[in-house]
Amino acid sequence: MGIPHPIPYQGSKRNLVKYILPFIPNGIERLVEPFAGSAAVAIASAYNCKAKNYWLNDFNSPLIELLKNMVEDPHKVSNRYSVVWNEQHENPKEHFLVIRDIFNKTHEPELLLYLLARCVKNAVRYNDKGEFNQSSDNRRKGRSPEKMKKEIEIFSQLMKNRTVFSSIDYSEVLEQTTLNDWVYMDPPYMGTKGSSKRYIQGLDLDRFINNLELLNQRNIPYIISFDGKTGEKEYGEELPLHLGLYRLEIHAGKSSQATLQGKSANTIESLYLSKEAIKRSSITKEDLLSIKKSSYNNQIELQFSF
Ligand SMILES: C[S@@+](CC[C@H](N)C(=O)[O-])C[C@H]1O[C@@H](n2cnc3c(N)ncnc32)[C@H](O)[C@@H]1O
Image 1: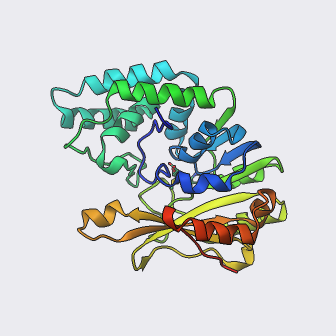
Image 2: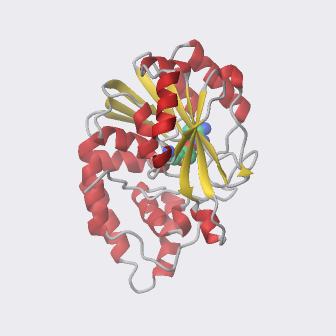
């Protein structure tokens, strides 16, 4: 089996990780993911022996508990998933609603795994009361317990005894980073301003920029995946020039959203590299330009903001 991806999660960087990984050097002390989600980048980094240690943080505490339990007690999680998954056979739609109600009362992480595996687009959605309110996708039953078990086991082997987990605001994580850390950030989608129901919290851009300024002052290397644009339509805003970032555009192929709508637009994702990240990974502007030349085949196109 290749790189595991135990939590089905909309917005996961699973398919883009091959473009992101080359910019994280081998042998770093610790990779920090303040907006971990399903932790696709950390998992791929561990699989490729990039860092000795990992810190996974996400504001969504049942999600972080789930990642932690998967790493520290993989059998408990896969057994629980298997029981809940197998109970659905008689009436999958009704079963989903029952489990969703129980999850909203108990916040049991393993129930979130079942809900994510079974819900529309594997997408977390919460109502104003903070209750999970995504519907079930009635065309499928969600990943089989056997497959889930394998994914969780390999994930656990990769991350055990070298990963810390937390569920605090990303700014508190950034404050605690040290010069031995590399930070990879994939903040919530900014397509709509203000709070986005797609994730638990939307992103306050000014506060985010302020935090990046602080990282620059402290010479902490960081990489950011930031919004995307599909075809002609540009979402969100760009990060300001005064941060001194390199901006790369990753042309990531067809957008599933656009395909659903009968369009064939390409998804374009921005990757921003801090000056310190460029300095530490000893990538020069010439290197970046040569990557540009050689990587058109891989659909990476690099663009510079300065
Ligand atoms: C785009 S997703 C990350 C996806 C992740 N890269 C992956 O591969 O699955 C953004 C994540 O940020 C989390 N988040 C939102 N606001 C946050 C905050 N203030 N602090 C920490 N995490 C936050 C969300 O819960 C969500 O999981």
